Image (cartoon, rainbow, N blue to C red; front, side, top):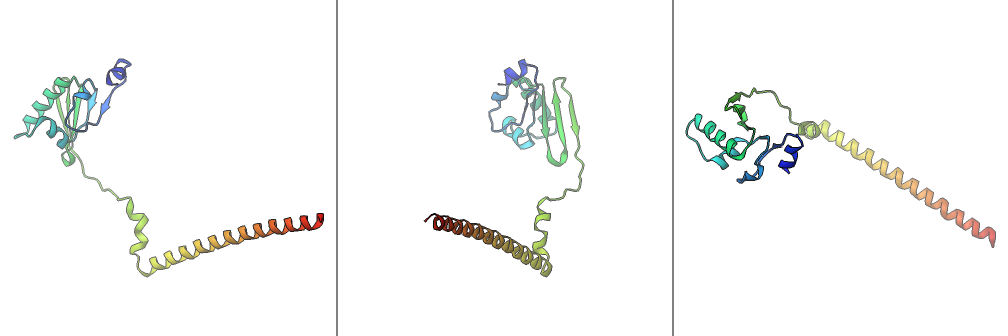
Length: 152
């Protein structure tokens, strides 16, 4: 599949999984994290060693570039020219998405009142729907009775 995409001029970006990266041979860019890279090239002792090993791996697999994500340390790009570009990460405030939905649960008495009001509203809605269905059903049944009475 990679060969067909490359033959048609499309770039192939891969987020590798597992230890066998031979299946990604010929890809344009592979984006492992530090742990995934360590699984494939082994542990390293100093900073230049992973760069050498990453360049060797890139050449071995015929990959144009290898972009290693290093969590709080940023990213390292190893490309075909042998360049290593390190990009540091900058910390930003991140808001958790789950907080808004559960905010009322920690609100004490006010939260309990809101939940109770929601339950009452939902109950009223269900009751109204049930009464409407029953009224429609009664109307149909009485209409049938009248037709049969009228014909007899």
